[in-house]
Image 1: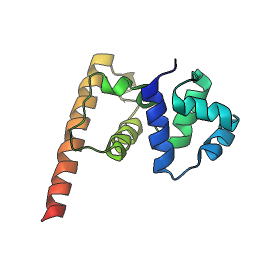
Image 2: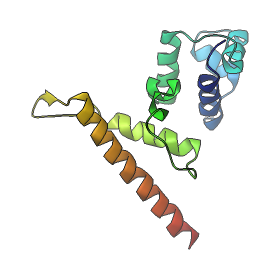
Image 3: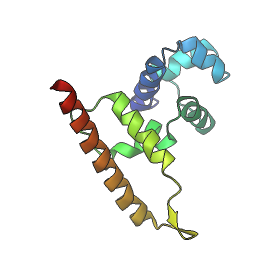
Image 4: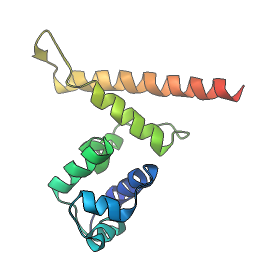
Length: 132
């Protein structure tokens, strides 16, 4: 059985863009039946398809595969759109390096954690100010 979380992410992304399942299938060069199976979680998605989906929706393959959620938890109040926006922000800040040197993975993780913290704090403040 394919990954249900991946299927949910694909559905959420597609629906957030008001895209029909058949439209996404066409952009992936798939028939509607294959697209339906992907979204039902009964068909595996190839690495090429995952890359195409990530490009279509401008998210990382890590986001699609759920790798961001293993260590990086979003606040309970965060929406799927908030998480997608954060993913786009993090992508726009890569590659990370200094003076022509690339950062070590543990340093990239530290920077990511700082950016995430600032993002969630700022978004919370904006929402709280909007309620006043």
